[in-house]
Amino acid sequence: MIKYDNLWLTMQKKGITKYTFHKEYHFSKSLIHRLQNNEGVSMNTINTLCNILDCEIEDIATHYKD
Image (cartoon, rainbow, N blue to C red; front, side, top):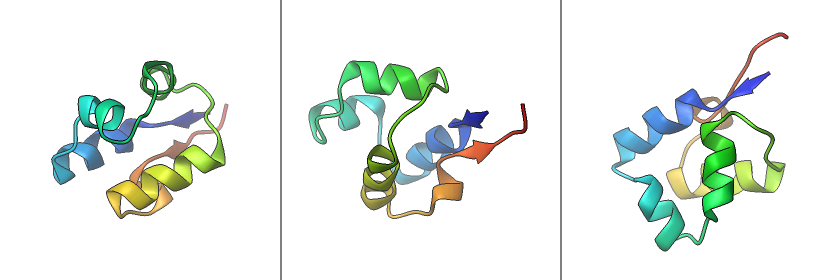
């Protein structure tokens, strides 16, 4: 299972909100919902998040064995 708990911490450190992702970076509300619920997102989305937040994948997601 992939969890995006680190994403919210990284966003907080960088001063970026979900509203900013939606309005400034045009992330759909459904994409933000999928991230909040640890649902699947594309690697392109992960790459975009890393670029926006200027961080590594580990700063966004953590893998847990099922």
